Image (cartoon, rainbow, N blue to C red):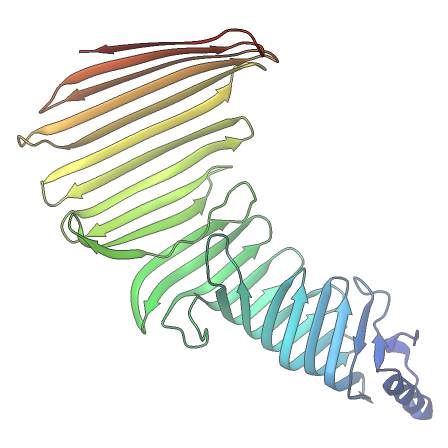
Length: 374
């Protein structure tokens, strides 16, 4: 059948067309002015009621890479909207969404899912993650989930634990922004995040991490939180919050401010208000790697740590490493130096230098090392 749905004739002609469609499997083409031509089929009955087409029994819509299946649909020809009800399944690009109802705009390939459920696999996780939303608004460029829940427990409709969010914004290929997040265990809210950003870029394998809860002899009972974020600019990282029974509260950040092929830069800062020792333990680190020229690369690492000493004072440690590496088609030469110092209960200064050279295949390779201690 090639006649557009908006031009189906009335009266006896429409009855004959409907009978023909039923005999051929009930196939209804959508007008060509839509974003992409779509086809609606039904295993049951297709009828024309007023200005709408109504289909029941195994209905199916296909538009480009989008496929929707349901028990019933109503096609509003004038508004170019299709309303699906009953065991709705939407499939796009390998993703599968189950819902109670769907309103789909054929002209813009956008819509609204009601009482939706999505399951997907996350890299590094053994069990699938389930996303349930009271409502999901989607278009070709983004999606918004309202009153969403994330869990790995079965059944997902009544899980033992879940993450509850008022709103989740999804920007395909870029990031997921989760707002007003609660971690609920057995009906009790244990933790709260005001805002979480999860990168979806292939070069950033960040993901939302659930709180880590445990017990050991050093910390007692502890909870460790990790909050991923994007920005500012092209930067990204993680904010860290640790709460332990014996050692108190620790806060920190791991931030990458430059991450591109051949050049990276990041730093870490962490502070622990150590309840056992009464001392503020601090830790800082910096990592740099960048090309100086086509064949010469430089690297730099620095670290600093303070903690309570055994004699009641303060122990401090610092370390600095620097390196240069030169590459040609036939040779490789690396020059490196590392220096470290300790102050407090034990004072020590040490350094090490390395020179490593490898020549062409079959020629001489040699290595020189020099250590000093004070």
